[in-house]
Image (cartoon, rainbow, N blue to C red; front, side, top):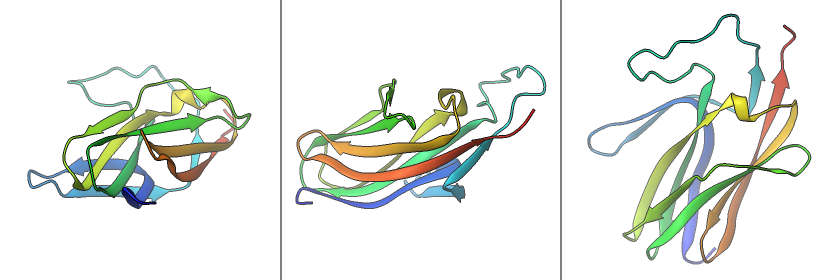
Length: 134
């Protein structure tokens, strides 16, 4: 699509970024098994819950824009939550959004869409969510 070319759109267990901007992705997947918690989780020093995962994108844009993520449940209902990145400079951009499995209330195929504010939907990816027996 003219104006924005998506180079990667992935789900992963962990993501980090070095001081020079290099992204490191760990545990890339397209199916997630959600297990009921065994005990209450206590946040320690701002650590993320172990049920979080990340959505990573890498794209080339030719002008300032906003890239955003829309997520839909298996019935087509949009999962609320503002996930957007204002892009100020043209060029190669990459980012991650954290997702909590608490948003995924049922088993099934969830649709993730990366959107450009003026060009529309850029790419669609699907994540299969399976609930494990307690």
